[in-house]
Image (cartoon, rainbow, N blue to C red):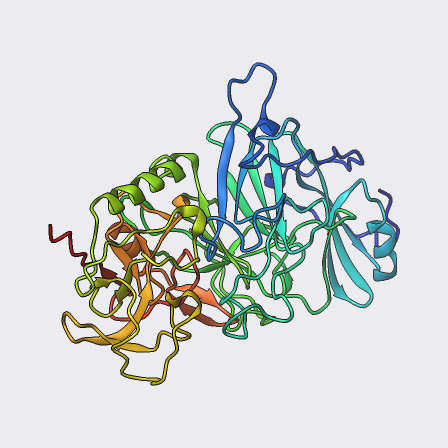
Amino acid sequence: MVLEGSSEALCPPPSLELRPSCNKSQPSPPLGSCSTPHDGLFPGDKEPVKYGELIVLGHNGSLANGDKGRRRSRLALYKRPKANGVKPDVIHNVSTPLVSKALSNKSQHSISYTLSRSHSVIVEYTHDTNTDMFQIGRSTESMIDFVVTDTAGSSTSGGGQSAQSTISRYACRIMCERNAPYTARIYAAGFDSSKNIFLGERAAKWRTSDGLMDGLTTNGVLVMHPAGDFVSEPAPGVWREISVCGNVFALRETRSAQQRGKLVENESNTLQDGSLIDLCGATLLWRTPTGLRRTPTLKQLESLRQELNAARPQCPVGFNTLAFPSLARREIVDKKQPWVYVNCGHVHGYHNWGYRKDKGHNVGPGGTAPASTGERECPMCRRVGPYVPLWLGCEGGLYLDAGPPTHAFCPCGHVCSEKTVAGWSQIPLPHGTHAFHAACPFCGTWLTGEQGHIKLIFQGPVD
């Protein structure tokens, strides 16, 4: 690439391994996914190298309309047959009218920082044979490996999907080292169809102390690493913001403020098992292969469901046997479905009485569910509160262990292990542009009550 204009060139430190410009860039091969693990296979390899998996919170095992291609609730990142990573190469100061000329070379990755109407800084990137790059965003263009849309309940409107998405089309990118230990690092912003990242005049950007450039995206990419081991000692860390160059900053005053937070020098953008990535509309969980081996598989969850049903739990009032529906029938209320009073944990079959608010309820279709649950009085202990159906958590990657499903999140009724509900109840998840609140990882519902979860009290068969 030949750039005209200012002859002044920034002199970056050798740590960025800046070298003469390289115009050749390898095309990105298709991404390996859960359904197509063979995409990451190499001649002679027995199995593909998996870097880790990304799981979108709020989807209990699959998207509402089903997982299709790159638009899914969970995606595995595999080693590519050929490296497609990039790294900083050459920095240019140019007059802004020449930026379009500089960015027109579609074989060259670059990041453009617009400082003023007459001055921009362009950083060219060159091919890196040691890393694989995976891009995440709302765009369905081919360079996006994982298409993510707003999760219901996470939008700025406070419920349901927002009319206008707050997730960037090119939200972020993850760079994975192709050699052991296969370190994965996250960076804000992804390259578009012209292989460019463009930070306009209004974007938060600055010149660093060593003369380089860095910046933040409009709504930001937030990351929270667990304070300890995500599985053995679950405890939330501190939410930070990741810059375009992968530096770590304290949160801005508001999500899109132009003033950046303070640099956090002792933290990095390296993903750990249990790291959370928030894209302002959807939150992703990163699980490593080691961490995933300690979580239940779909087959194990089905076995746990069958064990629950084999115990023949009964309604303490109607004495009818209860049964959790099959994992394939999630979110469809069954006649034998267990229901729970979330303020006390007593499990019952469905009944249409005991209301203390919103009188005049009608039974829903099929006689199995009311039009609105409202507040109910538990016939066992007389505590009043929400009365909801119980659902087994179907996304094993959200579990912290493979323990028995003895607890449920409040008020949604998603059932999983005690360690899982205790861990997720401690984690404040971003909501909208400035709020944080603990939520059920399976459906995204804000947690209520003192603990956000309840121990289930089943009654066994009387015979």
